[in-house]
Length: 193
Image (cartoon, rainbow, N blue to C red; front, side, top):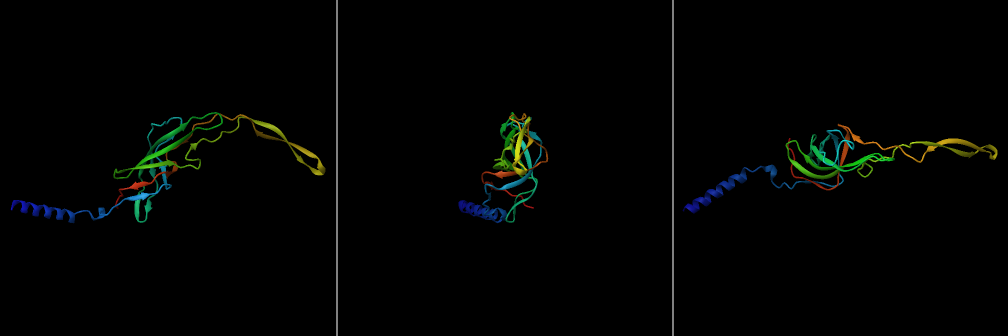
């Protein structure tokens, strides 16, 4: 008799727990953001190739709400964390450069989601690395055919053989940037308004 009573009590409490379950969490599979998605952000700190290295943690914040259908998957103010993955020092003829990798995002309620992305640039996600200005200019005559088959010479300045020393690249606080996801991001948690 005690076993039957115990079974009835367990069944009663399990039915009560199912009825009180949060209806928003039922059948929740999560959301997948595909690779190649761009997320607009701003830098929350200044960093450069002169003062930062691979161990320096970097913080960014989203500037827009990112929606997928009717769901706000990345609300404004979400913080993204990253670090400098590769850094090149300035040399003669080339400015310094760096590649910034994004590793995770943190929602306003403290929930963290891992990401795989980079700060986007048109140069293969390489920030900086431009060619420097020429150190000298040389005078070179250029001849053009003039009137009555006479050649007229003009002296023009052309870049010399050497270039100036490269400079360090710096990203200021509040700079507008883009994150490009290189792998799909699985959003398993969203904020409800």
